[in-house]
Structures are given as C-alpha cells and as structure tokens.
Image (cartoon, rainbow, N blue to C red; front, side, top):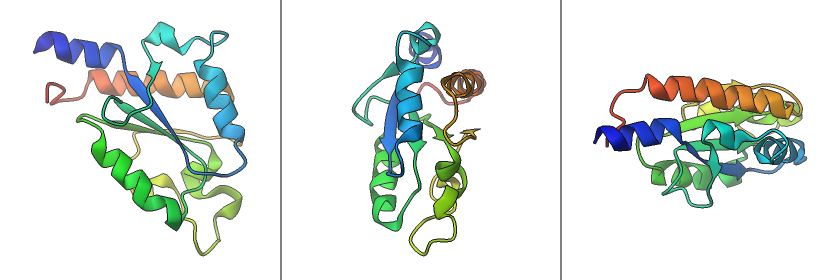
Length: 145
C-alpha cells in the first residue's frame, strides 16, 4: 500500500472542468500543461475521467445550471481528492458576482484546496498552484483508500 500512496502523491492526475465564461483561464490551463511550461515534470497528467483523477481544476463562474454536474464529478473522484480553483470567476464569481444565477465561488459548493487568482492567471501561477497542491497532498492522511 505504501507504493500506491507514493504514486498518488508523486503523480497527480488532473481533470479540467470548464464551467463557462470567457475561456481565458482555460487557455492558460492548457498552456500550463503544454511542453513549453511542462507540468509533467511534476508528474501532473491530464485525464478525461473523474474516476481516474486526483485533482479537479475548476475554471469559470459556477452557475446554478452547472452546479449539479460539478458536484457529481467531484463525488466520482476517488479519495483523497483535491480542488484547484483557477481565475477570478471560479474564486468569487468574477464579473458575474452579483448575478442571480451564479455562485460566489467554487467553495460555496465543494471544498477548495488551492486558489489561483487572476483574470486570467498566467501559466506560471497555475503551475505554482499545482506545486502547492502537491505539497498539501504529501501531507495528507488516508491516501491509501
């Protein structure tokens, strides 16, 4: 079991959830995962299934229409799961903050481990957030579930 725990801490698999917005943060997330910035040197790998992912990267404002999907995806991820909120819209609702159908941040629905502010944040900031998340994962208990 120690080998499995080490592998999950050393090689996080990422799932990117785009909830809408201007797609500026999405472009920066993709740029951070491309060879120029090379997130794979930290072991990070983009996956398409929540059942294989360790880290959920959320971008865009969380609307009431998207909230159930986000919760379902979060619940499908195995424990321990981590959430990285990227961009002003994911952190606080951004320019849609006072709107009737937008939550004021991802943390109103699911627990967020690392926040990456900016509109849009630079790829270096996203990589810094991933590194901070890895540090938090190394200190996490119950990794062997």
